[in-house]
Length: 194
Image (cartoon, rainbow, N blue to C red):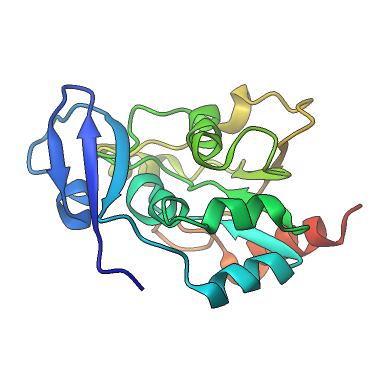
């Protein structure tokens, strides 16, 4: 409920204020994001905290890592509620990197960034798409500064989080999750697993 603003510090110590300015780079090359924070600090809505505590599952993502997902984890009270909750904690990674935000990251880096905020060993599952889009689609996205997040380098023997690779790619010329069927089925199966 706090009126707050998102800030980012880049590797070259540049500070950027505002979600839109962080989300849409003003230059073609920009130093990687090293840290994001909220000013002023925000406190969790008590109803949101209670919902997390009572949930069967907490799904983190998909979405822009530094401008859509992590800002929620910066709200005071969210991470303690996630840790205290008996819910299964599921991170869903994006399908593609994003220019100016995550183009320098590989699959494991996305999980590491989430773990910086929620803590190691908190996530039960990390879900990644394994189906590569068509070459012409990859080429079009590459021209916009985005790359396929290739999950092949992940340690599939990891106990926590357990990496789940599935075909999550939706139909069409845009690279999007098939949220109504494929992703929903994976999440429901994880919630039902022991």
